[in-house]
Structure formats: C-alpha cells, structure tokens
Image (tube, rainbow, N blue to C red; front, side, top):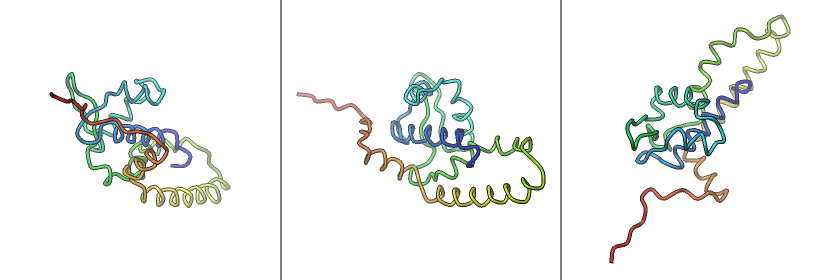
Length: 150
C-alpha cells in the first residue's frame, strides 16, 4: 500500500466524492468526479469499474445514471478501498528489485509498515472522512432541491 499509494489514494478520493455528493440515493457521473478531482475521465474509469465490480459502488445506466455507494458509508472502510484499488499492482509487483538486502531487510520492513498502515486504514470509514470534510468547511450539496409552493 505504501509504495502503491497513488492508485489507493485516488480510489479513496473517488469513494469520498461519491459519498459526499451522491451517497446511496443519488448518483454522480464519472465526468463530475473527474472534474472535481482535476483528472481526465479516462484516467479514473478503470478504478470506477474495479470499485463497481467489488460492490463498493453501484453503477447506474441511463440518462440519470452514474455512480452511488453500494453500501452505507459507515460500513465502507478505507483499507478495503485501498486493497481493491491496488490488487492489480500487487499482482504485478514481481518486477521490482531483488537480492539479499531487498529480501532480508527492505521487504520485511515494508511488510511491517504496510501492516501498520492497513490497521490504521481499517479503523477509518467513509463516514469518518465525510466528518473530516465537513469539519474542514466543505458544504455537502442538498439531496433534493428545495421548492416552495404558495
């Protein structure tokens, strides 16, 4: 997780964006997510697909389609998001360095650090991240527009 943090951090950002702007009832488009993150849509599509396949996101087709959370945000832990996002990277990590120092010192240390980070991420949920965003002054959009009839 530590070495492959970019993809994991992006997945957390995507999930937080969906939780913040759509939750489990509304949807947000991939284009809106990419725009708010300052990224190209094609760059986040593989992650959106992986998160959808895992059930963390639901993909809704059609003109009002997009993405919404697959489970309540209090039930989605950051370690699960990062694990799903970095699964492909972990499978291809055999191309890295080798040798006695790598195997005897660096790999065990990275394993320890990875376990510590994983334990910390396992304690944090999307609900916790929403609270952090609100504490930072970010206003959540209204789920339904307010309309008055007189």
